[in-house]
Length: 385
Image: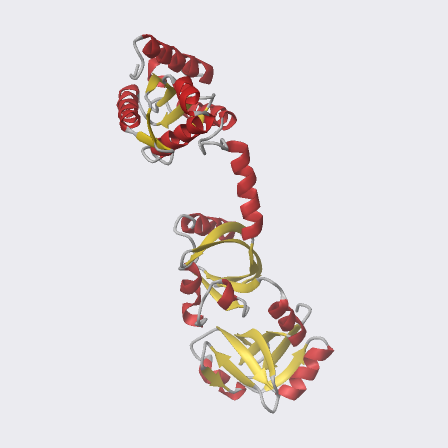
């Protein structure tokens, strides 16, 4: 028995025969006996003497106990008397003091039941769940579906995998993920521990809290450390780390190739001289946006120098990289940038290198792409080499 818990033992006819708990718990029992009422799910009400019929085909029921303006949350389990083998029922309820605490804390407290087939259902959530998950009406039979439905589609598989891992190992579960309510995103941290384990199910007690503010700051710090503030391309430091990581994967998988593009703007200094540095910044921002809109999310486009950029193309061979480079060159050449009434056009020269050519180290690959770039410059610029 846990602190703040009221335990009531019912006999085979559903009559309360004993109780244990703190003083407040025993006081509750005496006041409840004349007016005790249970609520199963959202609306099914019954008295304790109806327990035998209610539990005829069930071993466990989650209920709300109400009497004398008191409300307790708990469960009733069916078992058998050790001596007579008659069915008896044990009810465990959170006393008002603890229930009041659950109402007041800025978190959603929950109990999660996992059956032997690893199917999980929320058997209890604190009242904050309605506002937290933007659920107009919390319906017990649909509660699990209601909560899962608001988890961000990009996070749902990760959340499920983390839960399955915790359930299988019987260890604590913790995960941060996004929930999406209409057009708003909220970051949530969930934590739970297994508290009761039986032959047919286990119960997990835990909580959800809103970590949006903390996550926003965390993501901001990550962005500041990895992204070029002017163009929103990745910075040189992140580019080097990413290239090293990608090459390690290539060395582990012999049939996996990676290609590197190095882009340099042609005659960029003339734009700064003619229109000013603000115009030059505007050109860089416009071209970076154009490139980002025409590459994969998995690709890494980074600003590695003043007007020099590099593009890491994972799982891309040399021939495919040349084709991508030519496509980007043409898109940039056709792009006209409006700046304070002036029309500005720019071209780029692109050098291409690939692990398919035998380069396995980042410095080798970068030097090869640079050599190709300089060859392109010598050939007259605005080309892929």
